[in-house]
Image 1: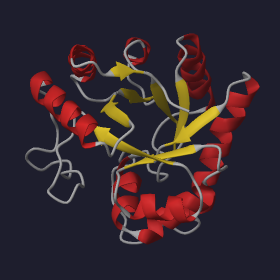
Image 2: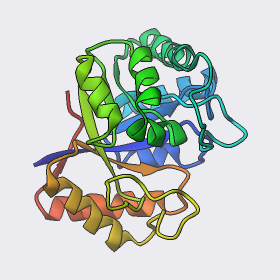
Image 3: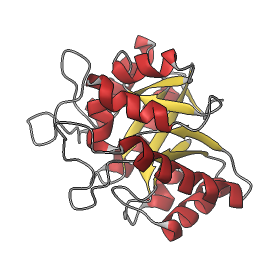
Image 4: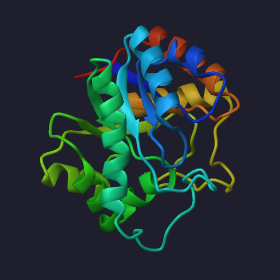
Length: 232
């Protein structure tokens, strides 16, 4: 069995470089909740130096709340807003001769697209190519919309987040939303791998224990015979 380990980067964490050394793909902020041209260039260069797959990490345009504030309705022009972020990131990739591997929505956008077809539709409309993967929680509206549009969808699981019974994530601020215990994170990672519904596992770079969790989980997966590698 092989699994991809991805990490959200370019969001201001001082640990991006060391986190990359443990991951196999990255999701790089492209101006919505964090990031700018300089931070994208820096993250892309570091990721290419380590042979990682590159992903754009678009968001609601919401730096004040780090893209984690939910919206009752999609903001006007959401598809165009997301497309601008993705195009900006893709341009930086092309400038270095790199290829865009995937898109992974960030924060509230990610969670709302899993449950609400309107947000999912905006993400799919902004998606640049059927050659580019879309990461998201399996079994929800985003996967449904992607498959209907012929976009390759990669189910994603989380090492550092708690789940509800319906497969959605526990909302931040609620008890059990964040996992900081390495052993618990490793058990969850193994369960997700063996469930067969995900191709990639994520840790958030703004988590205080991100590096410890990634290193511990990677070792546990290796011990169980699960290889870490990007996919195509």
